[in-house]
Length: 262
Image (tube, rainbow, N blue to C red):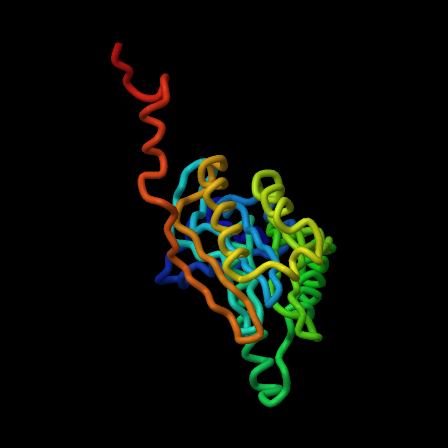
């Protein structure tokens, strides 16, 4: 029987009762997944130093080319031992954030007296999660950096993308940061030995220099950013750091910018 009212006329509620709309709510349609990111965050950058890792990301979420949301924190501390930096789709980032919150609560309840997941364990877990979603043809459109310490207490920094691919290096960047910031970081930290000689203050200065370059060169970036330092003492995170004021004031001295007077 065709239960659609438009096909056989609308019966009277006082005689037949109100129409049961549940017949119209069929779950037999095709499975649908996200085809491309809509609201996105740009680069995340990180560099190791002798006692830990410095990681940073700006607070902008762009709707295409529109700088839509200017207070989106893309660094997520985990159990005061690690930090996950996320670029890509913001809705998938929110899903991962809820997932990590549940994981942290489970770890705290199940093993309150035992060491929690290290950054290396967390990175392995997230890479398996991303690979599983990719294998279901419903990937999480994100590129993650995981910063912290490994099981031996050594600085740990690794990446995982939407395909579940993983890699590690003394300095890492996602998005346009891979082209614009990575050469700067590699100039200071070309290998693991150089990272072991780098101080905390030097690593922070390198990351701040990279954030300034990204603000000038990446059209999807912002001058307000979050920065976190992960050491054996825990996570020190600041979420509203500001680059130099009047950053584009120098443009007024460039011929061809704005209204020109002869």
